[in-house]
Structure formats: C-alpha cells, structure tokens
Image 1: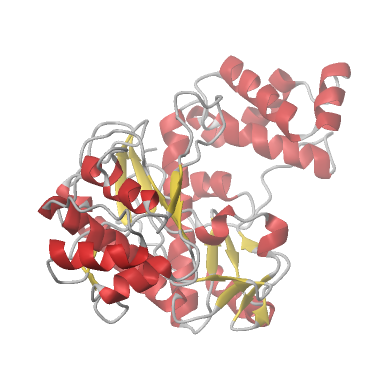
Image 2: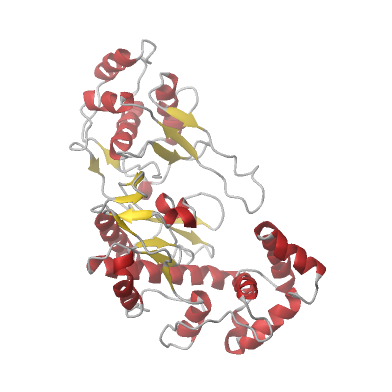
Length: 415
C-alpha cells in the first residue's frame, strides 16, 4: 500500500468558500473554518486519494513530529496541520466520514523486534473521490512537485528524515527508481486477479549510521507486494500471466558479496552455508541465519542471544531440539566453524556496519538487475534480495541476473 505522497498537488489554490459549499453537500456538519495552510494540505490529501486509484488505503505518521524537511516536502506542508486531532485536515475529513482513520502503533510500546504499524486512512465508496472531483481535482489535474521521490535517508534509529548532498550515486539511484517504477506502472499487477497493485512508487530507505550524510547503509524498499506472504506472492499475475513459483535470487548473496568486493572478483553463485558434518535443509537454514547474524552483531555472545531469540520465534520444533540436544546445533561451536570456513574474511564478522553495508550492496545489485530486466521487456518485482518474474521470462531473467554489470565506483563498500 502507498505512503502519503507529499509531492502531489492540483496546481491550484483551493478557495475556502468552494470547499465549504461542496463539503456541506456531503455532510451538514462539514467544518467551515479553513486556513490557507489547511487548504493546501487538503489539496494534497485529495490528490493522494485520486492518485491511489483502486488502493483505498494510505499510510502516514500520526504521532507528533516536526515538519518534514524541504527535500521530502517541497510543498511545505505542515505535519500538525495535517494530523492534529482537533484541527488537522485528516481528522476534519474523518469527522464527516469522508475518510476513516486507523491510528498505528506507538513505536515505544512495541516489543523488541516487532515492527510498528503505521497509521492509515481509508475511504469507502465514491464520496471522497466525488468531493475531490467537484473541487477540480482529477487524474488529469494532478501534478508532482520536483524533488526526491524515491530516495530517503533517515538517522541511524527512529524515523527522523535527514538531508544529504546530491552526488553521482544519489542521482543515479533516483533516476533508476523513477525509470523502474514508471515501467512497472505500465503493467497490470494483481494478486490472482483480485487486488490490483498500481501507482507504484517504491521508496528506498537508507540509514545514516555513521553520521556522514552518505548513502551506504541499508537501502531496501517495502510496501505493495513486499508486505504479502510468500504464498500470496506466488499468486501474482502480471498482465494476466502467472509468475514463477520460485523467485530468482543469488545463492548466499551476502557472503559472496563479501568475497567479491574484498578481492575484486566476479560475484559467484556459490553455496556458502554448508558446514561439514551438518548437512540437510534444517542445518542450512540455521547456518545461514547464524552467518547473517554474525555480520550484524557486536560479538559472539550477542550473536548467540539474538540467534536463540530468532529461533524461538521461528520454529518450535527446532528451538526445542536445539535446547534439548546440545550437540544438534551448538551455537558457539557453529560460530567458530563458520569463521574457520571463511578464514579469508573472518575479520569482517561482528561488525554491524559491515552487515548494513552488505544490505546496501545487495539491494543495489537487485534493483540494477530488475531495471535491466525491464529494459529487456521483462517486468521484475524486487523482494529484498529476490526477483519475482513471470514463468515464461524466468530463463532470460536469470541470464540477465548473471551478466548485469555493477559499477563499483558507485556502489562502495566499507570493508
């Protein structure tokens, strides 16, 4: 589902009298007090509703926070003007039943490791759409303000957006994402012909963990099909054609990226999650997760604690077996075996910034491949480090995946 897009406007200044007269047609209790700042926000919200098409749900941040900085808010829309429960435009529309608001989670009250659900507003029927149309807001009148549409940089933790200096890399990512989203929007993407995905505007989120203002950590995207279960994604159709039941991905991508960047060699499709004496699908799953955690935790003790917590919420059977049979998967011993297997890069474990930089490289690679697929006429949907493509396109997409050039002067590592 889409985020509230602060770039949309109808290229007009709404008039208070017309807004009130039109609103009273829908509800006799329609608010009559409107400031110019509120009218500006109202225009943006109605543009979002029209732009959402068949998606009747938009995500936003309800909690009190400063106005979004100009890079991400070129129209200068006030957050309080939009969300205040007494005078905010969203709540004004909620009070007259043009929209319905569902307030999200307080991030400070969510349990560790659990995602905080954002607030959302929804609309039913055509009331909100008719209201917008009567005010002169339609698909034909909606404009996008200039600015960054796809690239977001946040502080190391929390949701605070920060500015950054445009570079060759940031311009490349913005251009890539714009072209990619425009291409996907030319296709009809559905979940088994039911829920349609449209007005796609993927947002790449980077984190400024080292206070440098440089985009080099994280960088994945989300929402839309990313939020669907694997089983639901397997039901996607693109222009009526079914997708492959198994997505395309790189084998052991993060470890292979480490080797490729560290030793300046080609990215290999080599399974790095096999340890002698621990064969089988269950062991591979556990070794993979432990290896990834060794790249994202401070030390072996912290890693063991995080792994045990993950295992407890992942598989009751494996967790119980790991607790009862110490020889089944001895966590500290397995960490040692993993370091020995990867002795050439063992010094890179237990450095969280390296793990976050690996996600940055991984995400960059997958989006570059997805764009190359699109340029060859193959719609490819990214899901973290995977690609979802139509079954008939799978072989060609795999060839593109294995041959796409990655510019290492743009995608730089920290190791």
